[in-house]
Length: 248
Image 1: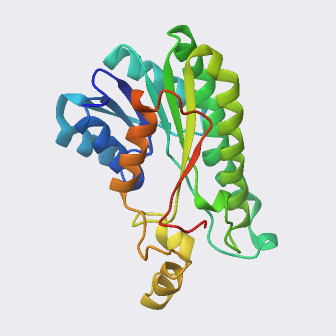
Image 2: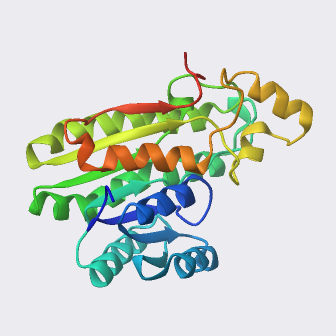
């Protein structure tokens, strides 16, 4: 019960890596707000997990939605101890000059602006209690970019730099900020990363991962649990690669 009595928000928590993080947090004693655009998915997971979980629909790129999400968490659980910025999006693989302005803006709104918005609303609460943990879910794309995903790569590079800047600024206030860099996994975004989902494309993709498999939601849940627990009380500003050796 490493997160006993902790209250967490996990954005994009209804599916993929977020789902794994939510499940691990609840198993370790936390109460969790599952924040997701997919209301029905979030509600289904919350119903499965019982009183320790609650669902809220949110567009993390919209200030009013993030404000409402924060208010919901406080009303439901009384406090916020952990924030996981997991919601993310990519664009389809293409030459950098061919990515539409609409896709570029969408990627940076969800992957970057959301971190700014959650900080605006939740950092003051963490500062006031002189304790808390923020975890940003970045990507191996920030460390070892793949071609044809240029603006997604850039958005995740932004996230790792933001993580370190946040960590330095918030450390005197007792708030830790870390990131995890997963390699692609069996999530709704996998097909977008690969462009097409065929056995040949999968084999080519897996060949770049020394351990020979994709990341799983359970992998992310385990790493997130450690970084957000008191066991990691001296760990801040770290961008942990959970990638089967992809970035070596």
